[in-house]
Image: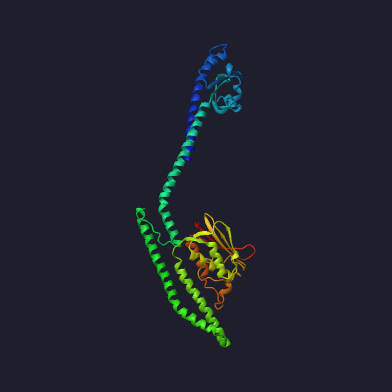
Amino acid sequence: MAMAVVSYQLVRQSLIAEREATAVRAAYYDAAIVEAGVNNNPAPDIGTVLRSLDTGESRRAVLQLDKHWHARSADTGLTDAIPAALQEHAADGRVGVQMVRADGGPALVVAVPLAGGDVFYEIDSMNELERTLQVLALVLTLVALGTAGAGAFVGWNATRYVLRPLIRVADAAQQITAGRHFARLDPATEPDLARLTDSFNHMVDQLSARMERDRRFAADVSHELRSPLQTLAAAASVLDRRRDALDERSALASGLVVAEVDRFQRLVNDLLELARTDQPADRQDVDVAELARQACRDHGLDPAIVAVLHGPVVWSVDRRRIRQLFDNLLDNAASYGGGATAVRLTGGTDRCRIEVDDEGPGVSPEDKPLIWTRFVRGRSQSSSRADGGGTGLGLALVAQHASAHDGTASVHDRPGGGARFRIDLPGCL
């Protein structure tokens, strides 16, 4: 665009300068003819002298003789196009040139002083030059736009070519972040970036191996703890049944042991479940509304709190994961929110949504991003470990189950007070 503007200005100045030089030369030549015709004839016919000039269609002559204006019969009114400043300049005996507007178009007025204080004016129409410049401006504008468009297209393709390997790396990294540790880069796709591809794949292999070791370790430890825990649970149940026969201190200690063993069992079960959350969701057609009602019955809630707001209730999801998702959200509402007040289901072509409301104090803004983290528990129970509190893994499992379905988990303020836990699951229909 800048080159088009510069080119137009240079060509315009060059054409105007050339046209001005030509007009001045022609005016000098015609002025000499007029001066000879006037001086060589005692009683000259000025109109005849002016009509004898070969001015063509673009030039017209005007003579100021003895303070009187003379022009061709068809050129009356041209004196109005001659600026007063140019007349004063020529009256001082100096040649002058000025651009004006005459007959609705640009024109160049050349003033040539003659002997005796007379002045010869020649008005050269610039309409043809103006049309040429307009065509030139149009051509340069089209060329500039075409060049800019072609440059943008080439630049866009070049940028895509350069960034394509980085886009693949970003896509693979995003898949790995989402739990798909099998994502790798193909070295044959971009031979020039083979070193980057190999390094990235090696890093992912090491990361996947380490995560697999950690998962196996958590699963193995949790599995090995289940047997002694079952023994402890059986012994604790015997103590609990005989609590009435014990003294007050022994009965209190027995209650604490039973509560802690129960919480320990739930912690081990949650750890085992957490170790399996890295696996992809085993999708099948599930009546989610009936699954939610069954979860409510098992938690002592009225199934009528389950409401289907929109869409079908049969979703393509992992039954085990969604059932545990309901269980954990209902347990969380009972422990921290005064119990669940509503379970809403919304089915859509782009996403399905699960919402669980409670009537508790809600979740503070600073805690909202933290509650989905492992081993984070509510403030009301974090200060005491002997009150039967949660394990701090329930909402972390909810987030993991949502992520296994490529979904998200979030918490919001419920209108009227309390918290609203929302799970968005895309592509479930």
